[in-house]
Image (tube, rainbow, N blue to C red; front, side):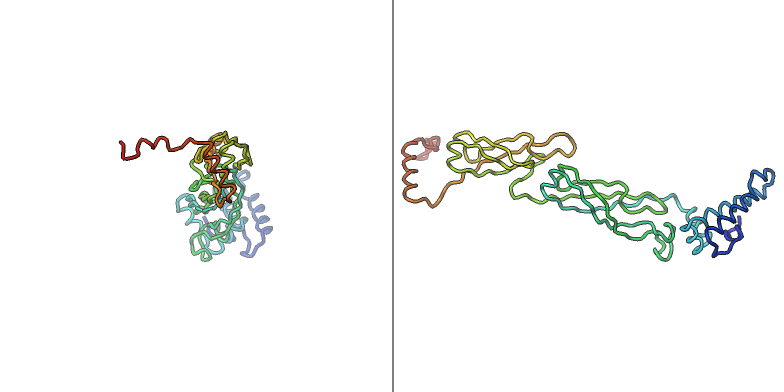
Length: 290
């Protein structure tokens, strides 16, 4: 086949798209296989005309042809099919609350795109790589229940592929900041709850913060420091399943200090009224007894 596409259509290299389209229509009618059923030469010319119009009617392909001629298309035809682009990894830091409830983010992702000047075929502007860098805004939905090290895949938002190959994926790697009150172990959440001596001894109904707002925790009379209460379903939502983990509340009794003389006297009276000692089990070890 002839390689001068402008010559095939009979137009100049500066021809407008309208001139190219008009020339193609005129020649296509003249050499159409429908009217040249037995003329193989006319059929060959029709194929040349169609190929020339396909290249010159596409602005990107025409620009590539103007720069490199037919060799640009020979190169693409000789190379294997387009390869998938590489994945892009982006770290994201999340608050404890965003990890618990999920959040929508818009990330500025630095990645490669197909060079618009050569349509990925390679040219001096892209140093013959067919790619150029860009920064793209990509929306990402972080699901509820993620933990540090989770990988969120966003399909088709990575680097562009070579020679028209598909894009790779965007992979978001999460890091969850520590919380001043909650700690996490798997899907369960743990916290410490300070209570007064009176609340510990007499019992109390206390409002406790959770990931979904406050809830009531009932302390029975005689609650000990270090005692743990379980709140079912108040932990982290499960990332790959239904429901949520549990919340474990450890009681810490706050012992008052700096007591005045009157308060000290009250405590001494309580000691007298409550003769029970918490060290009764240790009495048998006195004096080195086995």
